[in-house]
Amino acid sequence: VFEGLALWDSINASFIAFEPSPRFPFAQSRVASSAMAARLLFRQLFEKESSTYTYLLADLGHPDKPAVAKMPGVKSVISKASKAVADHVVEHGDKIYFGDLFLEVRATPGHTVGCVTYVTGDGSDQPYPRMAFTGDALLIHGCGRTDFQGGSSHQLYQSVHSQIFTLPKDTLLYPGHDYKGFTVTTVGEEIVYNPRLTKDEVETFKDIMENLNLVYPKMMDVAVPSNMVCGLQDIISKV
Image 1 (cartoon, rainbow, N blue to C red):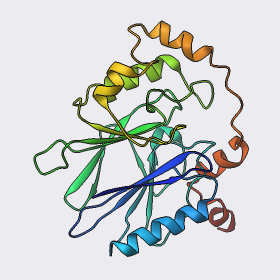
Image 2 (cartoon, rainbow, N blue to C red):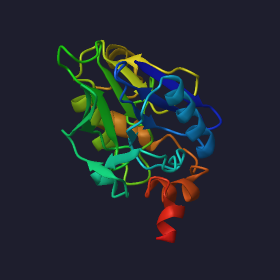
Image 3 (tube, rainbow, N blue to C red):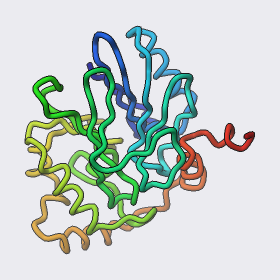
């Protein structure tokens, strides 16, 4: 079972998936500026489904997605490369299990050094079509910026082409946010229609990214410190 949540005041989305019976959900967090509102949404959904939440997965620590502070019973997960503090750190190839289902961790750096994509399993007992939660590495007909937090246009191009575009073409892709209100795309659609990442040469992609002239993220100075401890700064400061 899959549900998506959107907190559009900062154009971010959160995704919750769980095994129907018994239910073992994970949440991939892309929460907006109101972390308290996000926690409430998560709790209401879990209570409605009689679920027990287990993992809160972050695909990166980032300025426009302040982390959700710790909820009872939830273990935070983030990539080791991000150097952030969490209950569990993961690396490329790791698997995160919830019930009989699992997510495969794929390192997709380039937007930031710590970006990962979470991909559902490929076995006969796993969901079909497959799903991938791409964070900001791959957006709908776009991609994340590469000009700060250790970003690299060359690395992002390689990450998307080697770790996302190699998935089956009917794989459903859920990005961390979208500026036009869309929530899902597919590998096949992005291979054909993504105006940046369909370029045959990485140098062409680099030229595009270097000339975007993007503004400094408005929540950089607030969100990054919070995300580096997965929203636990108040708790950690008291220890």
